[in-house]
Amino acid sequence: MSESVHIVLDETAMAAAGSGNVLASRLIHRAHAEPGWFLYAPACALVEAERSRPGTAEHLAAMPGIIVLDLDLPAALAIAPHETWAAAHAEHTAQPTPDRPDGAIVATTAPKRWESHPVRVLDLT
Image 1 (tube, rainbow, N blue to C red):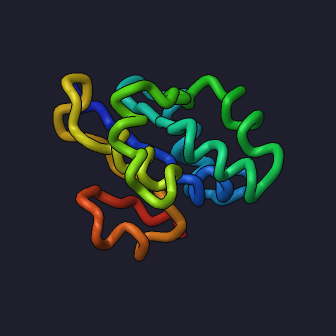
Image 2: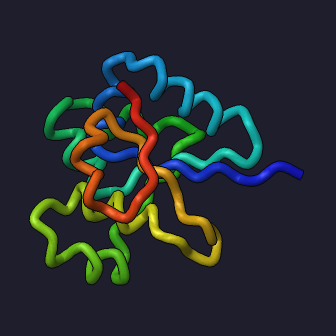
C-alpha cells in the first residue's frame, strides 16, 4: 500500500493553475486520477487567487480532484493574527492533523516567501 500525498495550493499556485502552469496541471490531474493523492484549496487562498486572476475560484472549485477547505473556527483562530489570510490559511492547512499526520506540502510559485515558515514546499516554477 502506498502512502497518501497531501498538497496544499497557495494562492500563487492556484493562479498558476488557471494560467496553464504545467506542474500545477499535473498535480490537479493526479489528484483527480490517482487514489491517495489529495489536493487542497484553502478558502482564503482561493479568494486571493480570484482577486489576482478573476475566474480562478470558480474554475478550481469545479474540479473534482480539488478539496476546497472552508474557514472553520479553528482555522479562523489560527490565522486571525496574520497579515495575509491567504498564506496563513495555506500554512494552517499544511500542519499535521489526525487525517494528515505528516502534514501537507505547500505548492507555490513563490517558494522564497515560505522559507521562514514551518512547511514543506513544492516549487511550481
